[in-house]
Image (cartoon, rainbow, N blue to C red):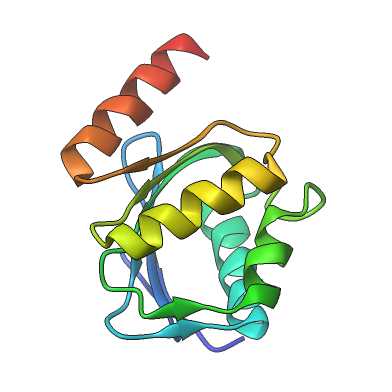
Length: 133
């Protein structure tokens, strides 16, 4: 795994991952396609930055080009990504929102997940989720 680590931030080929105030923020880098290999690398980076503790995660997917079918299925497997307390995804593309909601409906992850139009709405949900859990 090749990563850049500085100031509590890890940068992989496809994501910038940082530990913020009581949540993990993931910024998907511009115009990338996330493959199964990428998703596994990102999972290791999240585990490293979280010190294997569960956190709510905010994913800004506004610049995502694509995520492969294999990567989507891996990320929805309940045996993977065990560090997710709740997942907020920001996606401005109607296509990504529709695909995400369809995938959530079929796979029913074992953690709360919601897709948002704005980062501000996602942060409010994460804050409320942290206070309730």
